[in-house]
Length: 435
Ligand code: XUL
Ligand code: CO
Figure 1 (tube, helix red, strand yellow):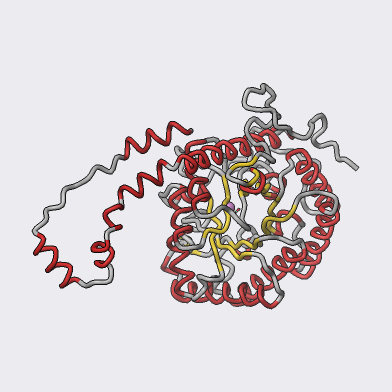
Figure 2 (cartoon, rainbow, N blue to C red):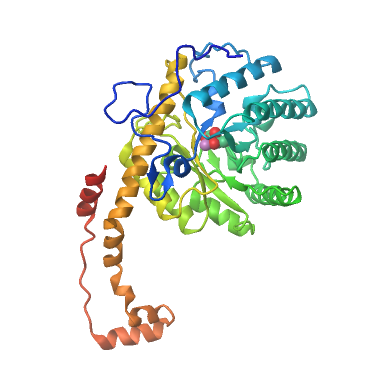
């Protein structure tokens, strides 16, 4: 039975760039072929359960602004109503995937055993709804940051009993992800970090986190899970210092603990900004190290300095992200998860749908722009020319040589190399022609 939450709204259709209908797709045309694959296959959109259905619209200065029929979220009947509404939204958007944390989808039990049995029950309920629909799980994850038990961390908690609680929690979420055919399992370490070094043994905590991730990988193989294991970098918020600061830090950590062939990265636009990077920087760092897994697409408010998790609306930014994703071979098993929430004044059901339609359109424009730049080949040509000096056999041989021989030969040549323009403005103008 339909809940009626989205009453009056129809499945969004592609109507083209000049349509005046705010509830239609203007750019996202799921079956349109771009560089040999449909937009749907390239972008692999996912709805984030936490922001769309679990978040109640509170902020540090005020309580919930959303009044949803599934509130308060403390009872399984209403968790099922929330799931009914979620799948009604998926019917309207035709998004191929969604993502959840355990805490988004089921109320916390009185014991961990009860929480786990509720997760089993609700994920069975999801599966019954997925049977006759074209929607899958992009990733599952455990919320090990909201409840007070996690305040000093999960795998990095000074209390070994909390470490054990974290193991049992992640095990149950991995089991549910496998059961649902989830393509990835994500670990974001919201409280894997610290507030002050005065009470923190950093080396010990890092070793515990490394061992914990090894156990995740061991369990993955034990249960025959074929999905990707991903960690999600973020520099701070909620912890003052988070161990998974950015892509480069995570890669260094994964290499140190011998996990570089088992774990990839889930990168988020807003987290990149918090770390003082651009999103394409993070994507390029992961891609260049063979560790690009998936993306959380959103945007931050550049004025506030917070992780505001807004829906994306900046085509030039998004275009450069997809340019680097396409260059790296695409999202493959990953996807584009809208880790984005409404503003707290956007209280209507229609706002939720419109936010996703707009975000899907922005990503479609970004993808088309990126594909056009790839097809034109201008950026690649400029790179080829810039590094052309390295194509000569003498230059290549230098990389197999040593300091003494390179110095001697260079001095013998008596050459005075002249600086060459980086042509940044010309290249930026080139990019602007496509956006
Ligand atoms: C928090 C964040 C999380 C992760 C999943 O900033 O991005 O929602 O994506 O735990
Ligand atoms: Co995220």
